[in-house]
Length: 271
Image (cartoon, rainbow, N blue to C red; front, side, top):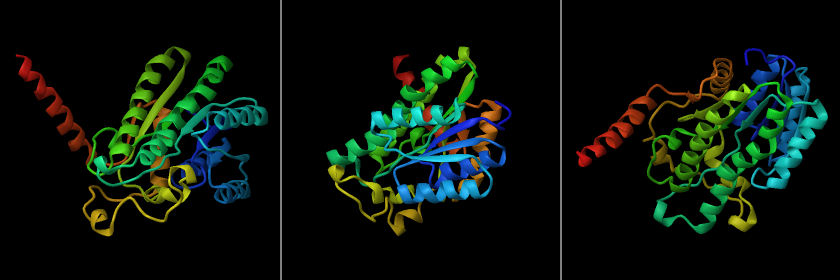
């Protein structure tokens, strides 16, 4: 997909961060937007802001962990605009702490949003995109933590590895239908995902203003923090170039290489 004018893009987690920045970039290119988010007030503000810039945009409050809600989102998108060309499964949450100390609620909430959310997005949108025979592109926000695991991020890493695998499988399956697939694997981006517990439902422990990292831990993180607008530019370029893996930081490469070298070396035990 090279041009975005009059194309319809659905973005989950679209009220802030990478989602909103990507929506804004697509709007500048003439795309029509369907934003989905669990934060209703932020969603309304995001849609109002896009409309003020002349974009055609609607907002649909959506809990991506709720399969019926994602199917309802798809129905509204197709009803409003008649087609969908880009689906960006971007919504996500993060919890921190030693993996062995993660509560069952931590695991359930992480899997519900980070893994079931994208799966629901595939179920609700992709068969209809194939059926409409207009090509398109499906994107996922994973993480650098979906390529290289890190300490104190067990549920997050497990779910993001799953998202990478989902994208890789879909990439192979959709090639014959002219639908591209990309998976974004960002390192440090200036978004509010570190404080995603603000939206944690009561059945999974309830909301909290606690961040994933302490100030001391933040100081030790690898990579400079970049803005969501910069990431949005990389996303649009990735769609145009039909790139499967979208990275945000050059320094991530050394860690990915080191991981695969360790895996490769482990085969020597068979020799």
